Amino acid sequence: MENELKLVGGAMVTLSLATSAMIVVPFLQLKDVPAPAALAPYTSEQLRGREVYLANGCIACHTQQPSSTGAGRADGARGWGRPSVAADYHYDSPPLLGTMRTGPDLFNIGVRQPSADWHLGHLYQPRAYVADSIMPGYPFLFELKPEGAVGKSDKVVALPGGTVPPGKVVVATPQALDLVAYLIGLRHTYPVVEQAAAAGASSQPPQRATLASASTSPSSPFGAAASSQSTSSQSTSSPPAPRAPGAQASHDEALASP
Image (cartoon, rainbow, N blue to C red; front, side):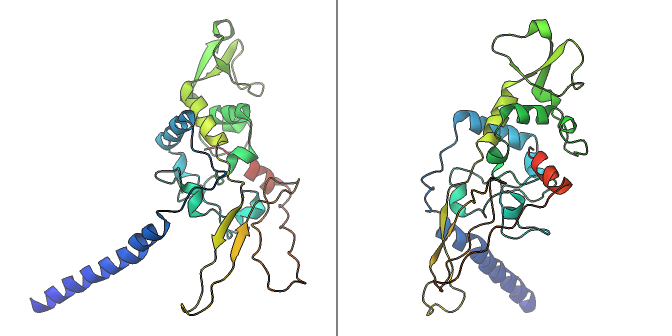
């Protein structure tokens, strides 16, 4: 019995320490991080769209957390933007980080694909835009109406030829419009300042803060995250990694909606 009590007590202590290290301490460190000045709160339309995003399981296939490493290529080289920081999620409760990338990261989809018409069409029928897309369509977010029954306030979706039966048009529902407003609002191109953590003992002098910002290269809305400041005045930064040409680049750009 005494050994069992020791075992249970040790397990509880271990669980408490792990919880403190992984949850409590980071929460205390980040709970008062202010929002970046350039980060605007969500509009009511975007908040409704965020709920549609959750309700339809978009988070199961898409992340919203670019990183400096990746499977073969860093996210900056894919054109997905700089690595995210805690302040980027100031207005997200909870943050929709995601766990799997069946589709591309959407942290900056509003920059890569700013067209509402593109998003609406892609949501209705993804394979009308990308032939080999595995994303499911969301036709229940739209209405199929006769051309003569379209109202003045209806948003008719412009689709490639052959997608809609003759004499019919696709009209977006309020839920579809809210979802697209949320996606277009996902823009995090402003620079952020990160305080680099000291790698050694606490006696080591603090490292300089590094500025992470998006590249303004004309070939992509983003480049790799800016490198840390060098201690040598003669050194120069390497240019951002070029985007891979061909099918992979077009696939990454096209599969850009949940």
